[in-house]
Length: 484
Ligand code: NAD
Image 1: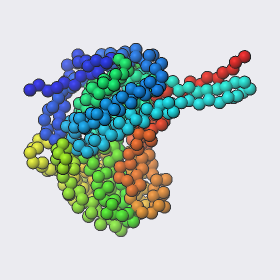
Image 2 (image 1 turned 90 degrees about the horizontal axis):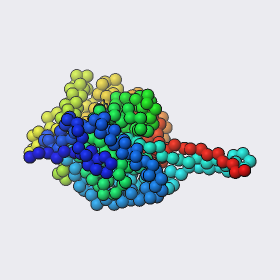
Image 3 (image 1 turned 60 degrees about the vertical axis):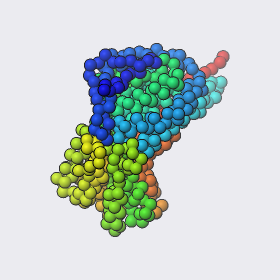
Image 4 (image 1 turned 135 degrees about the vertical axis):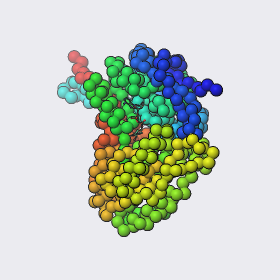
């Protein structure tokens, strides 16, 4: 039976790219092909940007409240299709249904937040900056923006940016990850129902050629990127060369510290979810567990006990606690890091390499894995593994753990478990990562706060969602006015 092909959405129509490069889409739990996607070309980008550019003048003049009404309709349509979106997401990405549902909820929250445009996009004024002269700063949209996104959150991540760009009066071109194109295709079927004017919102599937087409296009004003650090750096540099606005969110290596005074009965299950949720494929996932001081043995023992209990399987089964990793190549990469850890002399106390799931012999499963006695200089303590592999670095005190956090080149997120307010304050004050959890393993900012890290985890200044994102999508035009 032929597999469905994912089409581009340009100027209000579903269009087939003329490109001959066709990629497969896989169900990672079954290891089977489920769809195909054509990797678009510069021509597809040109078509989409042309449509978006032509739609801009009329869309820009549409009053902000009227633009917001499209988002209200979209929110309702997303709610009506909530479960269907979550299922498609699980089928192509692998995460369990509950995680997919959480992702869709976060996606919708961004649509909801963006509807506040009439207060969030306002400029500011001051009378009498000199006698009889008034000054006002208007926030104006710029034109066509584009989004380039990763494989791990195919539903939510595009919506960290797109609703804000649109409601501010810009038009948009999205490039989903070529590994997981089905989720946004499903979502764009719903976008179509919301009835945006033709050309306001567009989607082009593909990989590097589409990215480079967007980077080179003179009519693209700015790019929002989320993905690995090497690609984020590349996007940031190229946007610098061509004078585009850019926000580029990269990889992570998050430390989760457990102080000896932490209430272990509540913090261990929370920490375990931080490391193994989405099979470790989250930019906010814990990667290094840092038990501090004398309680380390007890912390490790309890963590190991909980990790062993995780039921691995197909994310569509409601009793599965952890799904597969998202692709075959990705599984090999994760296994490669486990070999690396062994070669470096870390102690493998839980080995997920030969994880078997009954009835799913071809699935890309890696079981919960734990390395103890990892030292901060090891490769597995520096590189982003992006899988269900926990690296335990034992620390002697708070200074030691803060030093560990601040010596990683990534600075996306970090968490501490403690019952001491002074310890928590010291930690949040001194650590470099910009998303900090206190007794929370996944410090995920909600749509009304900014999302993004520091160091090698973020390139740019204005982060994803939050209130500041309206600055990214607008230019402040200052008018100085005197009436004679
Ligand atoms: P990736 O960098 O391989 O791909 C991201 C996007 O860039 C994709 O759309 C892809 O088609 C494109 N791309 C890849 N290589 C390219 C190249 N050489 N030239 C031009 N375009 C290219 O990332 P991924 O593997 O899809 O996603 C996983 C990464 O994303 C992890 O590092 C993870 O930490 C990161 N991530 C970060 C955040 C955050 O908020 N900081 C959130 C989610 C994911």
